[in-house]
Amino acid sequence: MHKLNPEEIRKDFPIFKQRIQDNRLVYLDNGATTQKPMQVINAINNYNQNSHGNPHRGAHQLSIRATEEYDLAKEKVRKFINARYIEEIIFTRNTTESINLIAYSCGKKLINKGDEIVLAISEHHSNILPWQRLVKENGGILKYIYLNEEGRISPEEIKRKITDRTKIVSIAHMSNVLGTIHPIEEIIDHAHKMGSIVVIDGAQSTPHMKIDIQKLDADLFVFSGHKMLGPMGIGVLYGKKEILEDMPPFLMGGDMIEYVYEQEATFAPLPYKFEAGTQNVEGAVGLGAAIDYLEKIGLDRIENHEKMLTEYALDRMLSLPYVSIQGPKDLEMRGGLISFTIDDIHPHDIATILDSYGVAIRAGHHCAQPLMRYLDVPATSRISFYLYNTKEDVDLFVEGIKNVRKWLGYGS
Image (cartoon, one colour):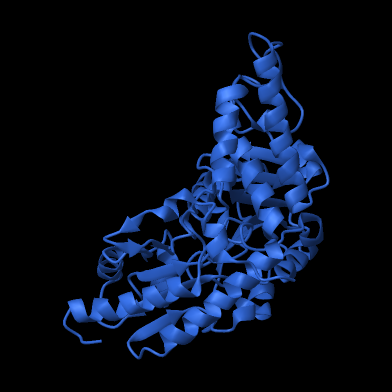
């Protein structure tokens, strides 16, 4: 397997031609959103210039072309995650909307008084709030799987929390704060033995590793386009066909109906019953182009590149006595994302000062306040890698950390 060349890849991304205060742009906020290559930008522009129409609704050529582009993008997603049927792919706006759809549609049907929903304490708010609302409305019980000192989920905790009273387990494949890759296969296997369905938040994993949804055996799986070189406003909900067919629609309106009468209606088959209203066709086209780009490079190469950068960054950061790393140190247990704190310096100050050097990172609670309380830290700083990042980016980031210390009077 050939190593990828991030400097060559950067040439596809026009944003990296700019400089910040005469410094190279070091973009280390990929866990929040990724940049777009010209191949994606051009695909969106080409659609808007030559094929823009309302899909599924017209007999004219532009509508037909828009429908073809939309359906082609859905087929690319199906192949990308190795789903069995194209009907199992639902387009949404993002991971958040996908989880809300599942909680409202599937959750309302499954959860009655005393039924349990199990999450990990490390979940993003998007995978907490919809379930909180559901249990308040339906009388369910929300339980949390807690992490060990390494930021991992133990086999004992899985078996202790997921019981025969558990109806839904909803968990992130990879933590957006700790970078921990959770033992998803083990969780899914045990949950299925207990009779529970499993929802996997793949927002942080899908852009960085090969997903085989049939091998994984997740019941429902969600992710966002903008975290994998695609545009904002396009997300994916995968569901096993038999589960989706049993779920009532979430949003009502045009294009998701079969027949509408004065007092009742019947709904369209999958996937259309979950795609009410005019869809984001240009977003779907952009996501399809992003998938083409990632597959041309190879997910295995991307994952190996990120592991190399993560190892290099951890070695350099751990050599600084005032830096503390959150989450596992073992590379086999984490993805290309590192959360950290610096003694006596608030994460927002770190991010602001680094930005003056052209280094873009994340700082705050990362939409994971329950995890912050569990870790007993108010906030962290976070760097996250992608295929266009380099060792030079890591070096500039580490030098920036030293400058943060100087700026605030702590020395180098």
